[in-house]
Length: 292
Image 1: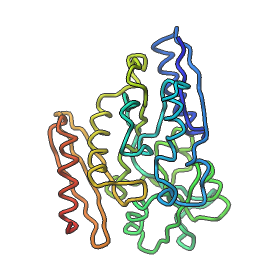
Image 2: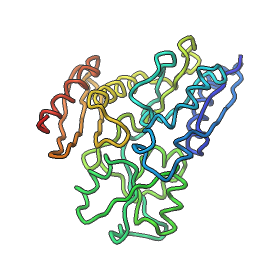
Image 3: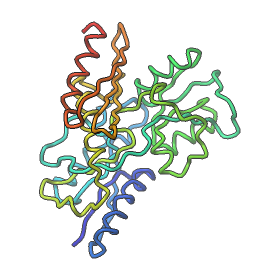
Image 4: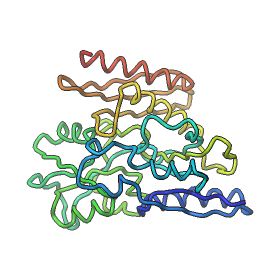
């Protein structure tokens, strides 16, 4: 038996795909695996923000077509980069254990403090909104490209700092570049940040993934995506979601929402099995708080 694992071409995407391949091999030594990489439109178009060129779907369309055509058997995604609408023929059938979901501050090599004379580079209005509250004196400039490309732009002097997801920085082995880990109160993460999603055809035997599939992360990610979907949240929308599970089986869902008039930040706690409904409820509460 052979399993073909689809991934974007970036170094981080390949590392994340290899994490899954290692799990498959550890649990199924007899199974052969093959990594199939491809470049997506989101990797090619780097001169415009995602909302100007089609949103998060640009990172998945080529891979999804390969999955539907039978050229690959599953795809490894950073779950935060997946659109809210997923083709029912190729559902997300498993998700990984969550890495630390926080955002981090990266300074240029040799720099000890944040230099406000240069912009902070980030890729979303979610980060921009929260950074400007945290650092009123800062300017924020959009930055595109994979993590290594962004770091090159930082170290060349184009930016004073970058804000990136901790998970990607850690998986690339670049933790020594981290200057500060923001708390989730300082910068609320994107929905599903730190979680990898496995997209397959419906007939795929998920048991082959072994202990890579994590039930708690599925509960958390379902709640977070429910909130963003109800808010009609796209890639560039200033929305955020972060869920936590307690030992007592309760789920606390935090949400951030902003419109032209106001920014709201609220939370709701429910039994874990009600996470999806909590997302819908919290979205309504946030919109009401913002006068909608």
